[in-house]
Image (tube, rainbow, N blue to C red; front, side):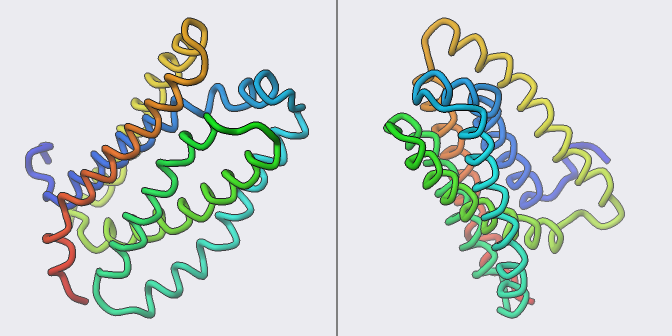
Length: 196
């Protein structure tokens, strides 16, 4: 299957993933350094921040999935996807204003909520619209694109922080996340007209 044969919804979901996760690829490699250098945090602070994100996401994702499966149509899935991606995209901007460890923990909590909603909605829509007979290729393409974006942005992030500090990485991360949301908004009519 050629890339141009992939249906529009899958293409735009993958493009959204590319921009969103490339943005977060600018944050992940420097997150611990940011906490220890800018906030005088410790390895424990970093561990708690990461735990707050993962535990929040883990607790909410399954109930969100049950709720979305209970509702008919794609409106709920799409709302969760756009809403969750928007929240998660704004979190790096919040890091710019962080002055205490608790501020980071609160941001990580909202990041967990956003990602629980986003991933649950994204997977529901992706699964229903996947190119039949090309399921492995569609999933592999998404993972490949995310991996390439994260690899490249990790390198760029290290350079940006080394030369200019944390601000450019966090601004770029949020900007890329918002571009990911824009890709999702381009699908509004295509997704919302689909009924279960």
